[in-house]
Image 1 (cartoon, rainbow, N blue to C red):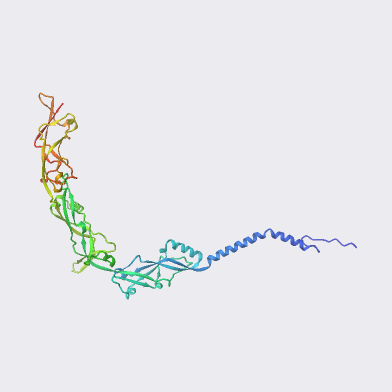
Image 2 (image 1 turned 135 degrees about the horizontal axis):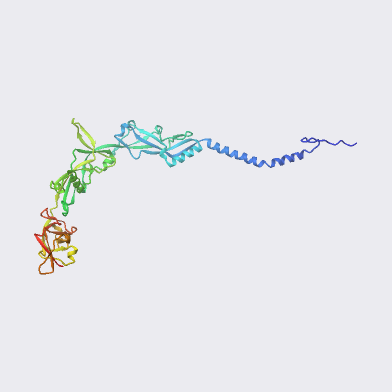
Length: 434
């Protein structure tokens, strides 16, 4: 008996068909995509771990990452100062996400002052603290009293507090003191200056002596160590002024619209001069107001009297010197001569005694300067019976050419100058061959 043929419908396994063949087909399908799914799953796992790591709240310590600023309360500011800069490093305990902590730490590495606490020192803090002989005291500060300032700003995700227990915060204060003071002019109280009394005249040497003459008593006020540094063995604070006598004289002449000679004839001047500043120390004068009550006010200028005396170490010298004539080119080319001119004239002056030997022909020259004669402006005459020409000159002056590096001089007559030393004494005749 023959069997009936089997019939199958698409998608439905025929009775008796092999399951193994179907399994092989499914395995081939998954083997093509399985490796990609595994990579995606692994990547998501890493991403979640990375996010979770930065989101997890942790606590870290940042060593010396912040600062504490110590300030004086208003009641102490006028009597004390904080030694040093008033800033001390403080370690921080920071809690929050790792990423924000790392960013915050990086910022503080570049500028620790960005995160600053404040501690205000009050009278209660120093009430029972002993002051040493240097007028200083040292405070030990409770870290719990630190106060966050406007500079102490951290990201909202972070909690920051100063880390205590590992160190003691100490700060030293120094008291302000007052001390009587005086002005010391040091090596500028005496000296010499060179003064030109009249334009064209030689410089003249004057000695000067200076003395400080403050209007009122002076005192200094400042931190004890700074005041002690300028105090002499007599317990007086030493103030300084650098006297520039030459500049003071010039200022006085300009201010009073007088000549230098007129001012020097008075013998002395009073000049208001600047005290050399002392950093951190105030100079005050003590005076009484209209009601007779003693007051104090800051000063920076002090009157200084400067007395001038002409240097008396001059000696009289006299000597005859040959006369040198300076011709204009048009006469020099013709070999001109002056007929009625002495070959030498006497020169009288005063020179410093130490320079007496320099009064000689190498350093002193007598000249008759005719270089300004213009041929078109003079009257030229012919000398009868010859080929000579001549001109006559009136009111000429002998002049002196003096080497001032070798001679410091002055004339007995203050109206005499080197340029107009002596008149020629009448008319001179210049002759040449045409």
